[in-house]
Image 1 (cartoon, helix red, strand yellow):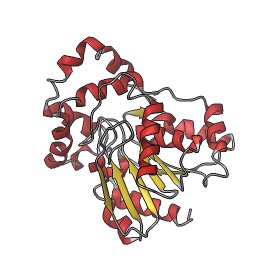
Image 2 (cartoon, helix red, strand yellow; image 1 turned 135 degrees about the vertical axis):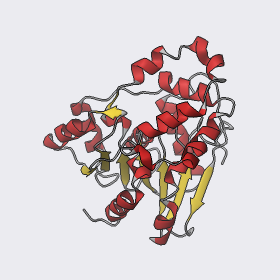
Image 3 (cartoon, helix red, strand yellow; image 1 turned 120 degrees about the vertical axis):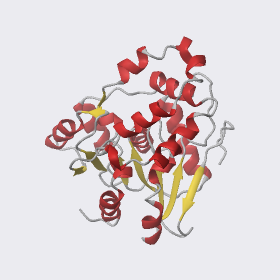
Image 4 (tube, one colour; image 1 turned 60 degrees about the vertical axis):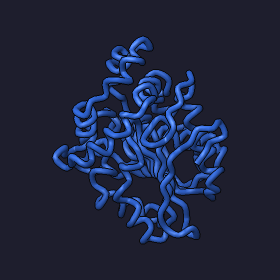
Length: 280
């Protein structure tokens, strides 16, 4: 699929064209591979499922123009995807950075969104490694970074996103390492670290955002893995939001990691399907 600025995105689809569309959006450094166990059950439930590699990720293009990886530009890209693919008010499941993007897109109402599921959304916690990542990746390092994405770094990063790292296979690591060898990948990851909006809103600001979703969709479902080692502090943040009356539903996966949607699909997919169907 080609965006209006000429950037090509890899999009994978399953299920019948007549089904309610479900858009799956991954987080930083990942790809649509993280949704591999979701396609069959969503299709079996009658949904049309669409997953995308975000700009800079997976098999999608990796533009290197300054400002291409801001929150605004990523929101714009996903809005265009919904328009070009003619998705009519798709339900959305978005993980980590993808959750930040899709919450902002829903708030702007530039594209109609159905039910929204946020899996360990980056905007609900603190990315504790961000200051270190920024110090270690100045602009002068960009050319060097293009040549140093060894497999062991990808393996270590992927194991950090699971509550139980033993569940990650060698093939899983290869699937994430392979795209990192394309020209532009390391540059895109560095630019996202520096350009994207990672700061968590205050509880009052987030309550205001969630209340602004009323009338455009049902309260979002936030899925949290209790062993998230990358985005810290989401559980107490969510507790504060709920105490403040924020319209939000929450599901906690005990022992699940940052990518709990990938780590525990047999647990999380049924939760999401019940939410889509109107259940608690």
